[in-house]
Image 1: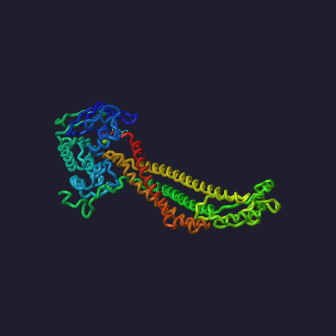
Image 2: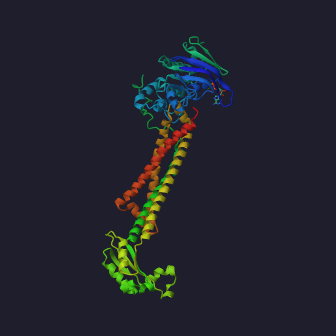
Length: 225
Length: 330
Ligand SMILES: Nc1ncnc2c1ncn2[C@@H]1O[C@H](COP(=O)(O)OP(=O)(O)O)[C@@H](O)[C@H]1O
Ligand SMILES: [Mg+2]
């Protein structure tokens, strides 16, 4: 599913943010990516959602070498990846419903086919009363849930979540985690970048990858702290 | 509780429609407004150029039909040896007045000739004045005499044959059918046509540049939105479709606006132009015979369609190219 070999990233002429990062994640696995702020978690996820090319090393996604993939191929790969961005990246001029519908809309799915699913999903993440609200009027936590709904609406093969519970209370965080676990149970490979140790503790089956000073260490499945 | 059983979006909220009719690129108003103004000016110029072309054509047609219907017979004074030549003796009418009468009798019998008039000596000299100056001092210099004829418009006239017959019948006579003027007017008409075509081509080039420029501005001011669209799996063609839809609409509106303004310009000319010919020409352009103005309004419709098509196609190709360039790196 995901293979990284000796991947290195630097921004411009700066220092290497990621150094010799190598790991493998099989289809259907669930992993946490943790480490102090500035360790490079977001950078690693950006590599995986194809917003950044590595300075060196090899990345394979879905059995395809994506380090040299052409622009024309990117949309198709990205449609198999759901992303919860750390800063949400909702479109301010679209309603919650429309934001969540976006991945389906750009893939050519008609509104009749997705309307009920999205309404149900919004209900599930607790945004049933904000279907037609614009992101500006939503709280941080509500925006985060809208971003999560958008990431999972197309039932992606790979879900990448960048601190997806950073803005919600512990109770809701557990609820959202259940959403990810459920998705993972249905076959989606999930990587969640987080600071939250309680989240990791609550998910015993997941692997834990820790970034420290640009290097990655991994605990195998079942040995999470 | 599921969405099916509960009304979505709280009480009374409308059921969301989806994104099909939605403008997904929000920050396009400023570049589109600038584009529309400039495009309306372009279509205005094109529509005025075409209207002016039709007006000029019509004027040329009118002049031409006037010129075609007229011809001049010249009776040249014969030089001494010619007067004494055998030919002149065979036809004793060497005297100018006699030959003029001969020519008049000959012409009156010809079916091609509708009417004729011998120009008086005064008229003759007045005509020559621009070339010869004050002709009164040359009272005794023999001048050619002129007969103005109107040709029968119903018949197809062989001017050359008429000229040959006239020369044979009357010594020193010759027919000038104003062919030079007809040719000059024809040249003028085709010059106006090519000039108009050149102007339209220049306007089209300018319009394409305009669209490309505006499309770039529209894409650049929506960079962040486009990044998100790319990240959720949008192809460049999807984004280009959003852009082309905006330009299709703007191009159509600009085209309608420009042509409407051009129509108003000609309407004002038809009512207020100081020269009668211009008023009449503009009036005929807008309100003339239906089979004629069909072409004028057809041409203006084509301008609107061209403005729309240029906007659509240029916006699409430009958007595809600019996206590839703006987002060369993922
Ligand atoms: N676009 C960028 N240009 C330059 N430096 C960057 C950029 N993005 C992140 N960095 C740097 O890379 C390091 C890792 O950042 P990031 O991946 O966001 O870490 P984390 O998500 O773990 O907090 C930080 O030192 C940050 O300043
Ligand atoms: Mg981060």
